[in-house]
Image (cartoon, rainbow, N blue to C red; front, side, top):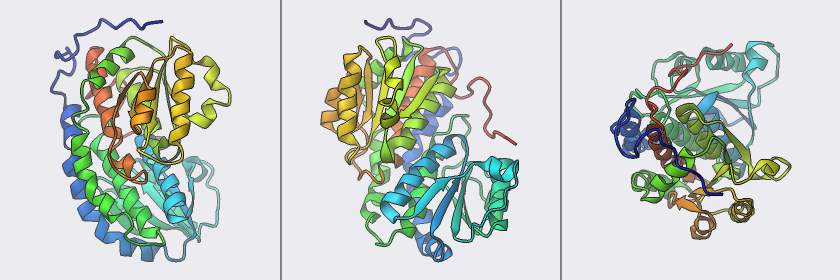
Length: 364
């Protein structure tokens, strides 16, 4: 069943609430330079991070929102690249339940773009009391999170004025990649790939005409599913979050393994499926197969990243970065950010200030 295009605004024309020159679009375009600055600043800190973690066997990642999606990537990278068992913290264990745990063998990595989310600051303090070494990832030097950590990795995104996280998100991912690489048993294996990240990010700022066609498909539906797996799964969840918070579309983000365990029953011609893939790796064949399975239900399939075979399996697709799978998530979010910004304007929404959101979200 063909999807009817939406009629709220004319694609490419300034909307009443944001316009073609949105702050979000400008900050998306700043990411190659922000990534270059962040990597130049943080890569030399790897020996210091390795020394802090020398006696630690586990990684505990503490985050919320977009930062949580960055942490999901770090969990996969830590186990695949560094061989370090990792987990995502439930901050309420610290802030509401005040559980007493033995974290003496743990490096706690606390992630917050502002460094001022009280729940994350309190969880860092709790982890220290429980014996953990602590590492902060934040965009604000001198923030409470940076001040409380044993080592603070300050991303070099610069001020981010649009509410949706773009450059602060990808620089967080870069900082986490640096931190995990410091723990890897073999040093220097990713150095060439780190060097290539800014140029690949710049290349993705011009995704081609397929992106505008994808905007039209998404503008015509209220039902969206995002799926991926493995090292790109954090990016998948970030895609879903961006579409939800910026375009007011309910989006479910699922691993394709979980999708096949029942939820695939809801996929039909009324739902648009967004698949997110790294450029290579063991999850890619499964995503190619999933594209064919979903298309057979009549659901339009939009692809982000992957290889030529993956993109050919989708109805519409844009390429991701030409980077190893381990570091592709540093730049892979960029096409999705562009898609989100353009879709928001297409729907007559303000991409810079989505309804009900603030830059710093406080939870208990």
